[in-house]
Picture 1 (tube, rainbow, N blue to C red):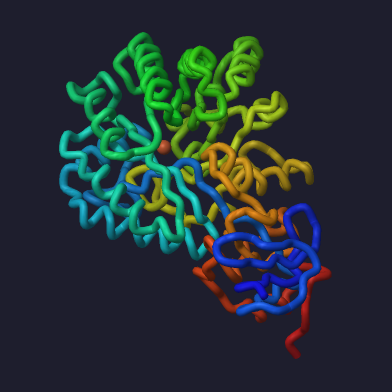
Picture 2 (picture 1 turned 30 degrees about the horizontal axis):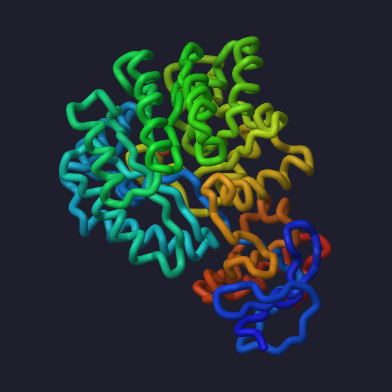
Length: 422
Ligand code: FE2
């Protein structure tokens, strides 16, 4: 007898199957006897492995308006604003805000998050707070922390030293922000330095790389070179890569094969990139999202990241990775049926691959983490961004929601209406 049986759900590939859970593992998938401590009827619902967010800033989340709002809406004012906030925010405040965000995440079926933690200030209160949050949510949410020198590795006297201190304290991933160093050369040197640190310590590497509209920015090229040099392959991710949007097409035709050769992955953040990029343009205004489909065509794994929710850079957000994928789908013009389905895969399987999550998926033996959505298919989930009816994390039912029957009377889901009211 299973502890939990999720009955009759439709998996992302269209298969209809029951999922039996014992302890923290998926014990069986297929047509199973309805004997379990708890049976969840998922007939007609989409059952997916959990959502994964490979790019977030949890030390800043839910701080919107503190100490004031970002009036210009630019990345640079956001960084300046955050510079003020991180000096007055206490560990307790950051922990409380992050734990609230983690509750939101769980309710949305988002069960793994990679978050960049600013290591610029010598007090490292953000690192202390996020290590505490990671410890507290570990039973139900996997957090990966990135040592992120927000103000540059070399631009402050202790930038490099504080990245190393954070890694020594237990932060998991090496970060970076080459386009914010003083010069292009110092940006390139920061990448060589950080790649060495990641290689020597056997860590993953995730860089805010070329998050600008500058068509001449060349840090992605340097990063790919360092990934190849140190064999960091699947352990390295380039976040944002927005300058690639504005680059010369001939140059990009050389760059993309170098990225593919390195084995690195890419994390565009569509909600943020579409609002922050192009702010210095008049008209036409560039979208600023990196070249998603072109990278995918070369086999480069590309996920979608959330980046920000209610903070100095972004005034909206709900911890819903379907919102992220929905925006990405539009901005990258991924409207073919196969591309829409891929957008769902990007916020589940691809993001899990980018984060190096083990035992992820809906196969027997995998961790028993999944989400039941009030939708029939991945594409319908993107269209409706529906209720999460049940969320199971490591064998525990952590969120549940009554089906919104009232909506079933609307012609929102032709062919899937269960019953009519009146
Ligand atoms: Fe970011």
